[in-house]
Each structure stands twice: as C-alpha cells, then as structure tokens.
Length: 286
Image 1 (cartoon, helix red, strand yellow):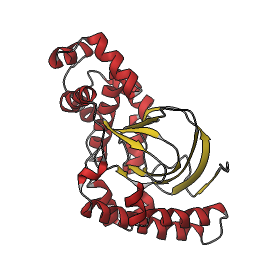
Image 2 (cartoon, helix red, strand yellow):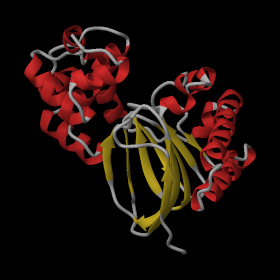
Image 3 (cartoon, one colour):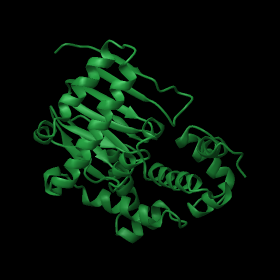
Image 4 (cartoon, helix red, strand yellow):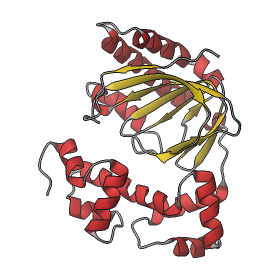
C-alpha cells in the first residue's frame, strides 16, 4: 500500500468555531480512547478493519465505509488485528457553514449514536467517495480556489448525507450492541444530574461494581467515572451555549461544587468555563 500523508485547511487551533481541515493519513493500527471534537468529523475508510464506538453504539468498519460524528458526540476506535490503516477525514467547524443554517440543522437532527455509519455500497450509491476524491484533489495541491472548492464539495457531502438518512432504512446500519455497556451508558445519560456513583449504578443494574468497571473500561476504552464526567461537561457546555450562567450550568449538570466542575471542564473541554462562554457569546461570563 502506498503510504502518504498530507493535510490542508483554513482552521486554526485558536479558533474552534470556524474553518475546515482535511487529512489523508496512512498508519499502523492503534487504539484511540473515547474523545470529543468541537467539529463535525467525516471519516472515509480507504483500507482497514476496525471497531468504531459512538455513544455506546458499535460499528464494524471496512474498506470503503464512511462514518460521521457531530460535535461532543463521544467516539473511540480500536483494531482487532495488526495491519495498515488508511483513511481520509474532513473536520468542519460550525462557522464554516454559517451561511447555510439549514445544512447544520440537517446534521444536528440526527440522534447521538444513531446512523453514524454508511457501508461501502451506500457510499458509492450516493457518490460520497467521489466527493472525497474531489476534496483530496484540491487539498493535495492547494491553490487560490481550494477553500472555495472544499466548501462546494462540503455542501454536496452534507446534501448526500441528508438524502441518505432520509431514504435508507436504519437496519442497514448493522450496529453491534453490547447490551451491558449500553445499559450503563443509558443509565448515566438519564441520571448524570443526580449524585450517582459506580456503586449506585451497579446496584441499579444488578452488576458487581468491580466487574462492571473492568468490563466497561476494557470495551469502551475509558472508565465509568470518565464517561460520567464527559457527559456532565457536555451538558454544561450545551447549557452555556443556550445562554445560561456558568453557575446554573454546573449545578444543572450534576456537579456538586465549582472547583470540581472547573477542573473537569478544563480537562475535557480544553479551556476554562469562562473562556468557553466568551468563545460562544463574545461577552464576559458571569
């Protein structure tokens, strides 16, 4: 397999609200624990066989498949076997599509952890692979028109995704569900505002706390405590984006004190609550 790597985009690390970044990469197989993005991620698998987990739903990906995640949608991946892994992915930040709110609405209408994967047959049917070919061509040798051309291809990509979600039946997804881990995630998703713990979750689900922790960490690539913290941070971010005060956001998201909230928010959001609020509103936070 030809090993090549390049990336191009107008996104800058100090601005997580705007721009795009395209990346073509070849590497050996490796595991990537659960993480969050502040962008929309569109991943096209050129070669590789891997397990991709999004919000508790597990997908098997092979050559030609496509998978997408929205901002703050928890995801991770791992490989059952050693081998080469070649992919291309496009990161789109919300500001890049600010003139097309209906497209952002189409992307945001999808339920978290649902309809993330398109198999190769669907990718080819809706010509998603050809759209990525166009993006690759313009980003491999950037020109003055590259940013505009990537925008036009991105609009085509989202239109194809929206059409696919509207037409294709959910059973085409071939989701592999781990019922026990999904039960843990579901419980946390419904009770994260409460003062829950590993022990209380285990009691509610009739599972041994130690077994539950080992199983979850082994298959999800993160601890139950980390998942709970990330879910609470996601809730706080959403409330702040809706205009609520930082104080109300952390209380409503299940944090018991501000110092714990602050440390956890910085760890998983990469910035302080005040900095996040300013990045969303341009105003000083309360």
